[in-house]
Image 1 (cartoon, chains in turn red, purple):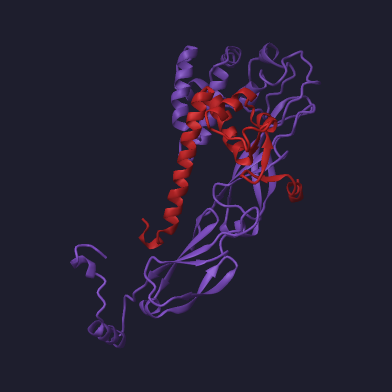
Image 2 (cartoon, rainbow over the protein chains, first blue to last red):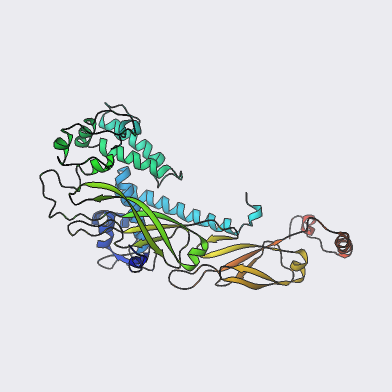
Length: 111
Length: 315
């Protein structure tokens, strides 16, 4: 396999890239009902909730993959999944804030 | 084939009930699941726990596992002669097969014995790998070598774990915690099933000079007391080479001086900034002349950085 094979179809999972709901279910193994419930509980948000079919930002793929993993490994229903995902996202935000503060802190004063 | 003691991995007796097995699994999953623990060895430990649970929770797989007998963990063994016929493919070769792959092949997405594999599309596996790269590589974009051990079906439909090396291009724009999806670069699909994807989680090595947050960089910039007081023009290292930075007169320690667009490139255009954080460095050894000059400064200066102490804390 050469490096050139990877040149195309390389996507950053962020807000610049969108995927369809069917791609989301196909890629993660979540059902359409589970995706709908995760949206209802606020764990993931479609780009436009009123549009049909739904489209999601690439970063939702990461969240949905985590959801699928947690569902399989911990036997969680959508309600518990959404709660866990929201806590995880809060942790991510706080860790990012902490990283930013640490980056601003002079190294000599760091432990 | 190497033996693994699934009961010992879950810490249960061989005669444990399904409920006891589930309880033991959950307890261990809370401790070692990669989404829960920060323990670096947690992921491997959880794989082992998950493999044990997936076999023991399924009555058919558990019966098949029990039929293998009891051996020492890690010991090479062969299943009983009729095992293959009873539980799988009579032609099954047990050489180079991982125990987990043996049980993964027993049910689920794989067709059972006697069933045709011809028409069942099986999607390829997704691979997820953490790619550790340097800050310089993130700045320029890089090619990383990834080594994975992946399950693969041979021409006879047997499952083997084979080492596979990938080269993956990480384009400019990477930073800590970013995820990259390489579509179709995971395991190959079978019978028209889609190819899996390769997911890369980017982690930057710590750098000796710069600290990274998103696409911004922070650099400690030590300056002399006289450079801070009088102002100066100093050379500052950036990822694109040295640049001159003007230090305004009266610069205080901790002040952030921004070098616009000297941070990491962003994936969809634009760049982060580089912030130089001023530190006032004081010489620890001074010669006689220097000491005399400092003394003279101390005598004539009216500057009092602690004046606010006397006014009750108001700066």
